[in-house]
Length: 259
Length: 291
View 1 (cartoon, rainbow over the protein chains, first blue to last red):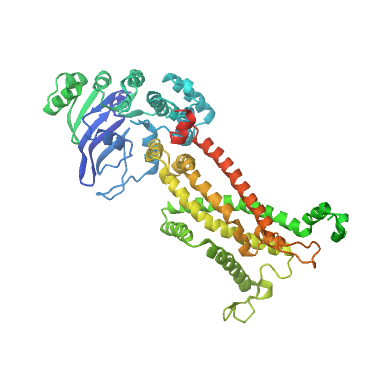
View 2 (view 1 turned 60 degrees about the vertical axis):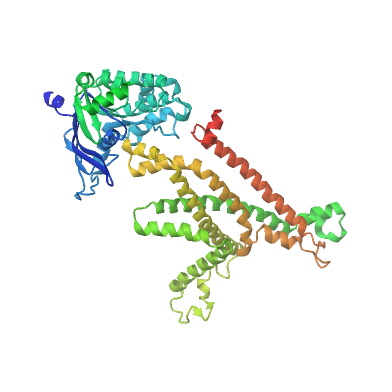
């Protein structure tokens, strides 16, 4: 039991990512343990979204390791432009690390219920009828069971994001990856999504959270990483990081965010 | 047809018209409408299939398949329909006969190409000269059908690949993020979502296909244009039903037929568009939701 608790669900070591000559991630390392919430904050362009996308293998970092439950991503041999080499492994990573996107990205041709059912049925080969019941209870949990038969375009942003969270939960992932889940929402709708995320955190789910919402990061996180220009400028427990920021960059960032 | 029609010259006006419109040749005319409809009913899905396969081909990782599909879509679209319709059935016909000649008449020493003439042995002819008339007609129709499918398949391929490119990348990427394979992304996300973008282009193609059916006439299929010209032309007293030049009425009839086809098509396509737009975040979809 100790071993499981002490080994991280997801571990990232010395990650480097650049687009052509633009270096987005310079040398990032972190570990996410089971049941913990890790937040990444920083200004736009600091690389925090790219980092999250690397964890899900949507982006391919040029260097560094991504280790899921002790299993490192395997790459093709070419060092300068390496590619993912194990298709089964990609699926294993992605089905266990479910993404929630900034702009929700619900599949527009499917009803809300079918959006929740789609991936478990297609990828995990779950039974469609059983998944219907699971999906209903998940939609109930996020408070939009009455919208099950609606189309994504008929829902408000907050409702769409809650549906997207239900979709991610339907995969029964080991960790949830939130990519600025509330940034596309106005303050009123933001709160309904924040509430759902807080509920999930209190259930003890492992979560990686990229956010602009300092309050959310402070309330939920076990550990916060402040990213600046592709490196971790400062990291620590939210109380110390927000209460007594050490670096000037973070002080500047927090005072700008507060105003 | 009817017993009263035995001697047309004795008929009253009313019965004359009835008897005239029920001659064997007029029935052939009526059947030719059916031929056009059958052609449309088969050529449309076949073209769509050709186009779909070509579209998949253009996305293939196999270099040869990709080049072949791309050149099919781009080259066939550039060739005038008339040229293509004269070329494809002839080429196919000669190709089939050539193969049959090689297999059946392997002992024939005379060359197949005698000057500019294409000569195969009698047994290799398609269809055999002894075959019934309907076999000849069916053969000509089938070759025409293939020509239609190849030409319109190229256009359909272009419409479909454009439609696939219109599907938002975030939609397919989300599939990838949830562990979909490329194949699953293609069939579960890209294909269902592309139709809404493909319908305007495909409906355009359908109209062009309807308009192109008289090309059958070029291929020796006795279609409605052939019969309208044949029956409408003035008939001297040598014929059972002599009449002056009535072609204008016959062609007017064709006009009405094609207009009716167009009208019915636009009704059906509109319903299809509405059905596909339902719930979508497109302009048409939002309109349906009353935004």
